[in-house]
Image 1: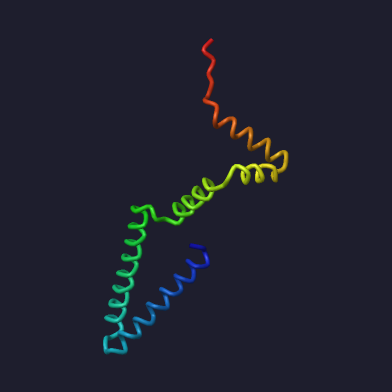
Image 2: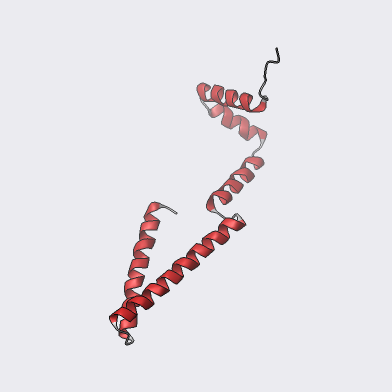
Length: 114
C-alpha cells in the first residue's frame, strides 16, 4: 500500500467516525453516548482490519510473497535465448559485475588448510 493510499484511508476512517457520530446523534443519543458508540464501532473495524492482515501473514498471501512468486514463475519460463539476449543487452561493466557475483555464489568458500 502506498503512502498516499494510507493517508487517504486514514482520512476516510476519520470522516467515517464523524459520520457515524452524527448518525448516532441523529437517532437520539446524546454527545457522550454517540462518541462512545462511534469510537467502539471504529475500534471494532480496526481490530477486524488487523485480523485480516494477520490472516494474510499466516497464509503467506502478502504482496511481497505474491510478487516474488510471479517473478520466479516468469524467470523460470524465460528461454535460454531470452536470457542470452538480456545478458548481451547489459553493459560490459554490468556483465562483469554479474559474472563476478555469480561466480562468488556458486563457488563454496575455500579455506586454506596449511
